Image (cartoon, rainbow, N blue to C red; front, side):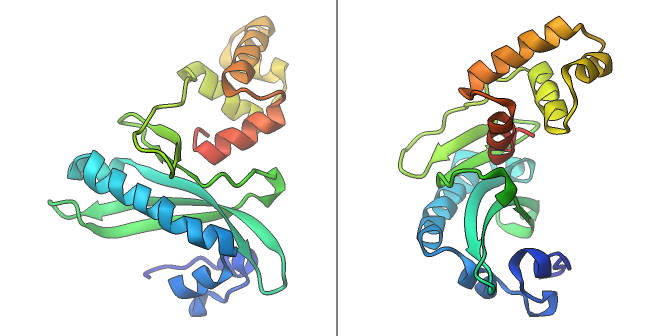
Length: 199
């Protein structure tokens, strides 16, 4: 590993100089450790069989895991990994992995994987139990903008001012967004969108 953030001590309770993949896996919740193999198998299938080698660096792989710290605290971790460089035949050379503590969002662990790209189609919340990829993000570009602003705590009035649209238009977008996401409130919406990598 070329770089390990100092934050690994806060999130995983592992000293950066002692951090290794093995030490991280030792912290995994037993159920999540078993299911992680399914997630990584799905990710490998997608990256190495479903897309071309030149597309690999345009996707990030996103899923949730629980870890158990030395002090006995269970945390929900948003795992994001992205290839930075690959060989001509699609072998990974350099990868960046980001693990974020999102325990405060109380996101349910669903053992699903998302493949996010800003250049190619994205595939959200793919089941490790089913074959076949389906695009699930039904949000328009404007709706994603509004979701992002909601996640930053802006009010309807502030969103309207920032996007130069009426408050009525923001309310209509918000209503449609909640319906599409099949959630009842913006807290659940933001949790779901962070988990799926939409924002």
